[in-house]
Length: 165
Length: 165
Length: 165
Image (cartoon, rainbow over all chains, first blue to last red; front, side, top):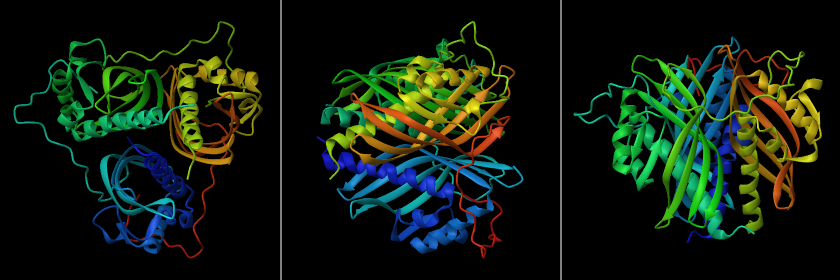
């Protein structure tokens, strides 16, 4: 049976992921940095402006979000795998909405792939890699596409459905 | 007081619901099928193309999502009622975004009404029925409307509000 | 270590927040009222039509949502701080979608700032204040803007990025 310690760890991991979104939207980047290990490695894509090595570099890099007038990051679909009692591989999904001061909008439906570690009773993000499931509007950053399995060779579009879930 | 077993069950149920969305977006339908019982009954609407009896039929049916170029399913608002320690009635909400290869979009704000069952320490979906709270774009499937209570006869629009939460 | 009681309280708090959204979308306002204390104070903005003192006033006020044909409220990013074992300060985020009978849409990306209290094994909302992180469409209510820290004086837009996360 799952231990009490694991139950609590799951709650704490979800809270760290939620706080990241909240601090990003309020641009309180000092608080945001405390959610990551000092030596964290974070990549939003293969572009030097989108990668950060270490907490201080991450805070400096995420200052780029001041280019937007307002943002909203909403997190869900958390799936956690414990590698040890103090190390976890965590996947979550984010709906990130951005608006310029001119009212232009950009949205990304993305995946965060994290490794997290428990330090002093807190679950911190040690590595984060972002992938993109979908996007809308003026968003044009080179965030890598999330994996989507292609249809088998013999797959045929259903003729009775125009659109579908 | 709620038992440890129930606390764990709640965490596992939420994870099953999250995994469904993730596997649907990656179209790894074999993994998705493992989240359902072998004899599951799933209905997205009163249309033979939207109904499935059994895990294999479900996998075959959901292959229809390859009609879309990209999708993003984000799950939230989970409410769980335990009928027994191994059976639960679960309601959740999904924001499902779909994009064709031409860039046309369709979104649904939907409700999943599930019965779930614990088998071998896993919480599986035994029956699923989808309802639609809202939609946007080219989505035109006959997903049944979610219940919304009509206003009482004596209800009057507030005159001081143009739009409101 | 976090107590079992606190673990359970966190699950119950999240469920109360989820139920609020679900009842609002189904306009079952009697059920919604049961999620609040009798003497609750709720404010969606500095407008008498957007404020309510007490459960009955809240139910009366939220009847304004019948101005919309359909709505979808999706909740996430829950962060909980316990002031006592029976009192908590809770922040969450909501994606609220609204559609008129003409098909016009309005969306808000908002923050709920709640104080919650445990009464008879249930976690109820005692005070709620809404803030707005973003909006889209015809939404024009005076919901107060959520705090967003301004950039430091020496901040310069990154020249290599057109748009960014």
